[in-house]
Image (cartoon, rainbow, N blue to C red; front, side):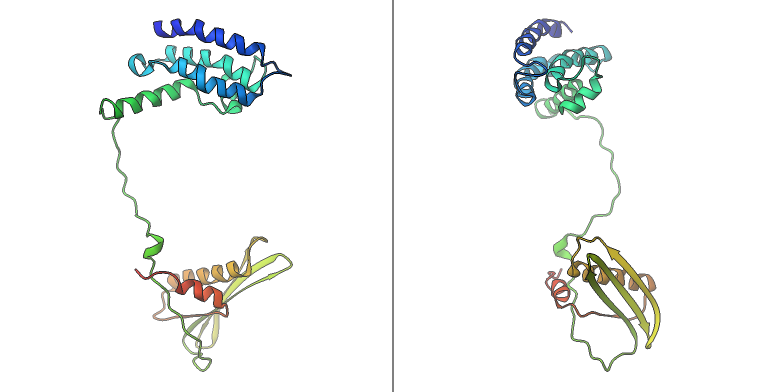
Amino acid sequence: MPHLNLLQPKSCKIIEKVQRIACATWGLKPSVVKEIYLVVLEKILMYGREIEYLDKVKLNNKLLHMQRSPLLLITKAYSTTSTGALHILSGCPPLDLKVRTHVMTSQLIKNSREIGGLQSFEFEMAREPWEVVKISWSLFDESQTFGNLIHTDGSKIKNRVRCAFVYFQENDEIFSELFRLSGEATVFMAEVVAIWQAVKYIIGRQPRQAKIILDSRSALMSLALVHER
């Protein structure tokens, strides 16, 4: 800590000068004081840290103590305010964490040293949007009403947005479900959500073949615009 002890008087002189023109009710704005801290004081306190920094409790507490006075000037808070609260109010991270990050980055870039161990996790890779299979559609023939059919629809009446789907099997109604969306949603969004819910239902039921019937040309066109994989 000898290096910090040498820097402390220098930082204290700068803080005293800033205090003269940054009082609680007049003087420099907090944004200006914060800029002075980030550009001047923080650089002074972090100077040479990558050489002699040791992640010790005593050293970290010393850094936080030296950071506390500038944070009080930035926030114009009471002197009894906790250091953790000052970090949140000022938007300045704890100096010991910033120094630790700076040291680790320096070791990784300049010294080509491995920082810690990497832990691998098995996870599923998400499919890219442009790799989604295009969904084709055609005009509905009203004479072909047999089989597994799902009718979807969406509406918006007096800022009440809703969508629903009804599942028919051989002209018999098997299942139906209604969904409510946010009042800011559009009819197009309701139509798309209805299609999505219908597809989820089909996947869960797993019929051999099913058709989704809707009257929204814009929703159909949006499905057709998806690129083929």
